[in-house]
Length: 532
Image (cartoon, rainbow, N blue to C red; front, side, top):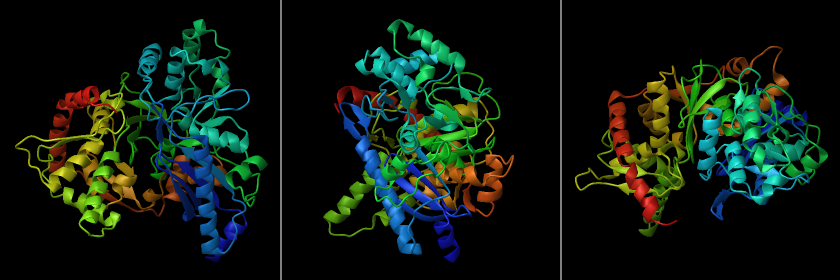
């Protein structure tokens, strides 16, 4: 306790804050890279004018609330005021669309990764670049706005992501970490910068629009893990901590996306390692040894925070519909006068799934609360379907919904593991799906036919991951790579639970996924005939 208190007073702790899709979380770590305090703020995206968005007021209110809760915990636990830290880092959900004019004003409301409204642009750019451009990528949003002849386009002076926006306002620096940047626009692995050939192709493509800018002029600079990316300004310090306690001058690491912080939080930045984040969305990432044989619209190519190529199978939907069913069971319990702890309810229902038939008993579900690019749906309609002879019981119901949460992601991962024969030794899991011990891991191991481990720190998630990147900035030794820093200094004493795939589960999931793919026209019919 005295050691931690002294580190806080001396400004030798490190702070990481991540803006996730449902929670903004701040984590303070000590000199051993262990979490010593945290604070969080819950928020939800809004669907306004057919756009999934968060307002800038929500961004800053949430950041300030999570920081104040962390500072209050520091004061309560250690009896000292949090005035300075050794380094600071911000991360957020990747991709999306944030554009600003010369005065720094946001031109249109933030369009998040969740919007499947750029199919025309994404398809055209994928063909132009011969490189997969997913709908949620920032360049797809930009090009779609151009194709739509949106009036604001001519006024664009700067385009960035949510993490880049927060970093810019706190430091004045228009930069992104390379992992986050790789979700805006393709990266050239040789130059470790935005791909110049593709930038030129884009400029030529929009030449007839007579825009006031060229693409390279509005993109942020690309930085790498371990590089300083600016310092907290006086204005930035007051923006984060309106009480005025937090001091300016703190160095910041490059802002990263939740993909990069997930890699760091699970020690998955070296080749042949992988991690899977399963919460509101689900994305599995594998650090590749070589480039893929061809372009796949289901596979995104991004990078680690140090610039290694990563293949990502990303699905927009994971646990949202599953959570809605759990809340329905909670509502039923309340209706009959039974008080139930929500955590206990989750654990009970998840454990019940393990008693179900390995294929889910012939049941079928699609948890598509929003559109799903992996299976080519621009909108979503959550569905549960069964036949008269399906084995309809609670265990199969829960197992089916757990399987369905991973269904779209599995389609993408099957391309990597079966068609491209990518070598993967183990997947590191993190996110809400893995909170109930052993269940989410077992389902994921069945989906990927790969061992899945969950580390003790997995619950800290991306906020801890960006804190570790900030710690790497100030604590790395000369010529010490990020993978070495993680293995030798962060995870050296970390232990985790490993679940190996059960052959019967694997067989059952394969049966389920065939049913899942066969039933996709049902989802299409629901979208066509059921309004929002």
